[in-house]
Length: 207
Image (cartoon, rainbow, N blue to C red; front, side, top):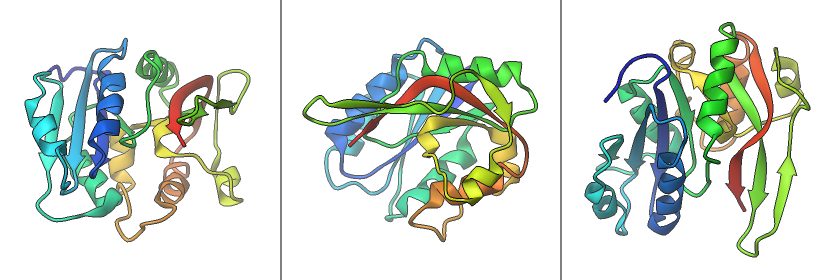
């Protein structure tokens, strides 16, 4: 495992959704940015999830099996505690990453060293093939977004890559939250510095 700069840790908590997880993992491993580690935290699944994860031969995949059900925030923190990357992306087990997603995020974080995170637009899709685009800016910009978040705007973690040191210093995920935990995390993170807003749609969000 490479540990030099620009290593991205992708952390996916999962529970009983093996078929969807396989698609998600496939999209991560197909990234043009190859310097990554994929930490999949199996939150005590009762299906074939763990046997499938254990069968993967890609050395970038690091599966973790939990003996007790932990919920998403705790599972994410468990992954964060073992992550080796300079940057971290938290991703749901049913969403997809366009193949240039990591490369685009990493380039922006490299060009804007003061930023604590990058944030992109996203695209939604459903089983019938309907898609809808949700861009957030027309051109790349770095600025604070704390006020927008305070007044109700929100983003999912899957739209963003965080600097792992900034995230750890903020305390990671608050495990007392089981709803709107993304919004709570963003409120803390954006008090620590600006965020690079990207015009690209770098998350495919499954409806």
